[in-house]
Image (tube, rainbow over the protein chains, first blue to last red):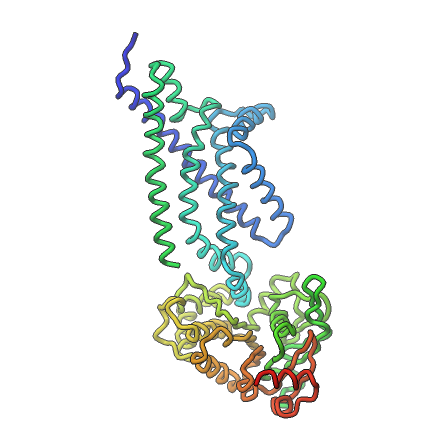
Length: 216
Length: 251
């Protein structure tokens, strides 16, 4: 039987950790773009758009991410779209992130006083200009810390992509365990790696919170 | 005021204006004509609808019935470009200043002229500096709003409104949030505007100021213009018991 050193385990996990990071970034950046679009739709005065976005958010917040992954992976196949684990994971994590991000940002926009909107309106700015130059810059300051904090949730959420066969950190851990029969060692290493990715982000979020708190 | 040119359209013409919040009717049929250059003080108890009336004039509030024209153009919420044109003519100053806290004083003043009137940065900057000098705050161009006192913030807000070169200025209790010692500096600026012929509509609790500066005082009561006339007429010889009661309650 082949013996695996700790370095064999760690080096293979590190290779797989790249995909955790890449998937997190795709979900976060993609979710950010979709989230901004949803946020704008929700901020307009159109009732139907507001309800549509609220429903979208409720659907994604009210169902497990695991179900969303399954539905994306198997559902799209039923619809005749050939999906790889990659696309299914990227699409569902993007949608999942967008729902949470738009909710976080909507709260930040809501916290900007009515007087700011009224002042911008009185100065004849149109809706886009009000958002772009008056509301969003102020909301963004408040949003930075919770947004970075949510990135941690996304990183951990990518672990679920392992169930549809996407080889990232968790899936690699399972595969290595099957070869080495050392589950405790392997999963400890996996946990440490998640921690090493997430902890700096948490620290950063906290430092941002302090920074922006002082400014306000 | 009778010196207004009879061919010029009224600065603001309001007829039969009714406005409800839900089932609560706050304006119950307002008729009001404001001539260019007129300075009008609107007084009355809180809840009488005076702020709401002011906010209807630049479309911050929508009304259900009646007609409102500004310089001959009817207010129409459904037409964004018409609203944009109207709001360029009607500046507003708020009780709580509402400066943009993320922008410097200079940028606060430059923002709207740059975006709406599409003036160049050089033009807007020159204008911003002129206006700041006018309100006595030249040295605050690069300051942020939270570094200023309330009185200074309100003077910046006035400069910001003036940067759009409006024909009409609405002042909504602009000294009510100020410490007493800061009221004077703001009122001095408003008084100078009145002297220069700016059309002013102000909701105010400063009766002495209203008496000194305005051409016409409007007393609102329960959503209607209850009594109006020159400051002397209203303050020395109030006709209705409601106005008499209101004035005596102030002392």
